Length: 222
Length: 308
Image (tube, rainbow over all chains, first blue to last red; front, side):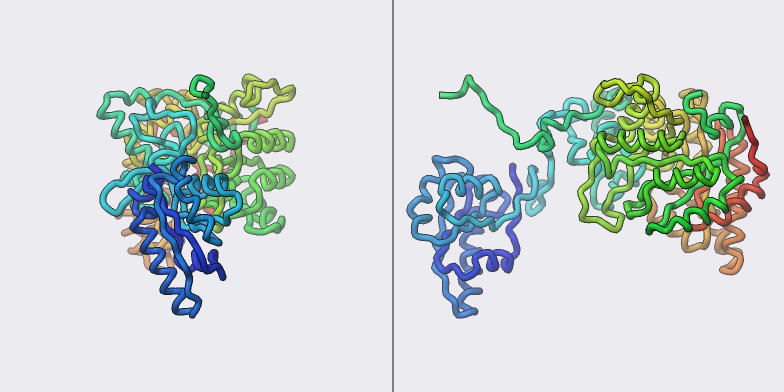
């Protein structure tokens, strides 16, 4: 899922500026599960903003609403009336949600209250980590199901650099060496042979390097 | 001959090779380069020019290499995958070749987190193995990475680095084998202090016959102090400094530490020279280039052979 993290309160207050009628729009999907922008976080942020503004003697009117998803037209339609009466919308969705609102409500001023950090999973309660770089050309079949693009700090495709020590990455002793994980996994699978094959220069054009990406499926069009 | 470099000639004549290292300045000061070049002249067959090592901005490796050529030294330009994509790398290599650079060391590159611009974006369009393959195809197949023909191809004697001490150990020899398959001609290893461990790695290298396919130069470096020895042991990835070395550095006291560091370096050279399959040494004395002549002399490796 998409993992996000709420921005610092001061940065959010600076975005709001002098506006005094805002809507905080959460999202009930990914960012709710990673506890960054669900309805609970929406009300916490609303309270924090109210308190800060009251302290400054500039009270603010805040509406709160969290649709199930902020990245699909039909789910953001329910925000229509609330957006109409607000002078600013703070989106607590990922960057996709923010842009969905901008495109659906071109007259509204929408600001992001969450940093979209990565595609990953909750490793345990309170710990999230990256698993996919959305490179558009999956290699997990060759690497024992462990992604070298995001698990290796240098996105190497042919094995580890010389910087790994005790199974940890050179950038941080807390970070596992992605290629150590791949090696261990391929050993268990009896597929160490995979490591002897040279992986050719990757075609990055299927990733962000190829420009904004789009999928058009004629078979699915109405 | 692949590139006809002096290093290639020395190695293919079966002579024990000596390479040294020159760290370009963190400025536009040409004099620094010329001074270091003067020191190293005559005591190494070729000199590595680092490419923004530890991700710190320094004078470009290829520009520095060209300056060395003008002073009659042979450079080994270094190229990392960190800062350039395949377009920039190939462009720089055409230029390097046109400037007379004949040796190229292909590296992954240290992560920018260590350097003076930790907020920069890294590239890693290619990894070191893909880089090696690209450079070899440019030379031997006369094609760019995209497959287009090159009319006048850049010809490099291609090298790589390898770390006999990094983890996972089982993978390291396999990585070397992969670099050999990709197309290297020589290897310079991480600094050897633990000769026993290095000898075991060489055994594995010989088992795979890799020493017959490429020239292996053992990396060595003089220690300046016991503090440096401890730092390397504990903080430098892929480095193995045995207690015996630390004890030797401690035993002589502060005043004689540098002298003992040089002695240890010479001892390591003498030991690795005896290991079957070792074709030379790579003396790394970054920011201490002035001791290289003394080390090479004490190791009995002077004068350097001249091959026409």
